[in-house]
Image 1: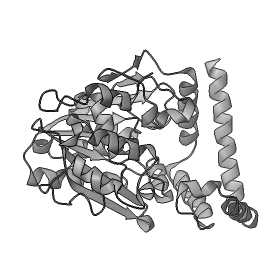
Image 2: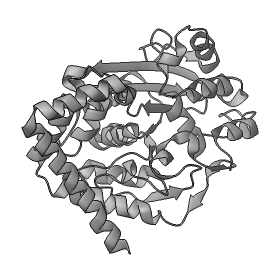
Image 3: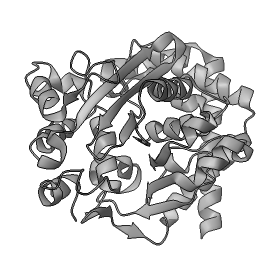
Image 4: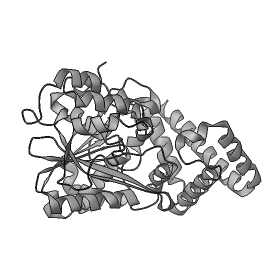
Length: 358
């Protein structure tokens, strides 16, 4: 199966002014937004730098591996910068906001591909625990800080620039892109051509009747892998396209695993049975708790994890950190009882959903 890199090798010689962005291009833009462009891309929406120039500066950094989500991001920017299609794309309006005490993780970037449009791209969840916690907050809060930041970003862009707008984002990035488009003023909404939500979670039920959301639903292109978990969370009004992945289970959320055929993804007729079980189980589990209980559970787990000194998700697998977490569980019986009880409910929900599927 082919992937984004194969696509770049095949289509890389055609600039966007000849053939506009397609779903694979939009995923590449979203994936490139995971790179930390601090000091490289301007915060000014009109002060641009080409992707080739940005790549040269980024690849020269001694600590570049600490400025990406996964190492393949480095390969992607290098590969894209070496194609005629992406090399002269202009980058601008970079914003990177990280406030752990407010459980806020947000980043966005605007691309000018050369076809007369602007692509506003929103970063998904990074490796920070604060970013993970903000995602969980979606299950009990009407809005989260990243969504409000995305709306602010869109509004500021619209004031400063006049191009028609495309929007995209992977994971949480897709969610905040849709949120910003839904909550924008009608004048801004009219300028939005399309929004690509790439395996991003949905919204609370209350959003399904929101006039602004219903207005932009026909312009939302939602993609989920066959075993999607993240993209199935909460509610969606827009239809979704199920696509093939080279991985299994939760690993299908990784954009590098998405299977490509020419200028599109490989489409499937429906999600896997396992995905349906996960969807039913997580929905039942969340519905078994009130918003207040979800909030308390999230705060409790986050507090236990960070009490061990962890800041990034990969630190959770370090032996020393795990020992600290276990110690915390043992010394705080009330927290341990609540967390274990909630996780037991989740396991039971999985069993019930699996039995229903059978």
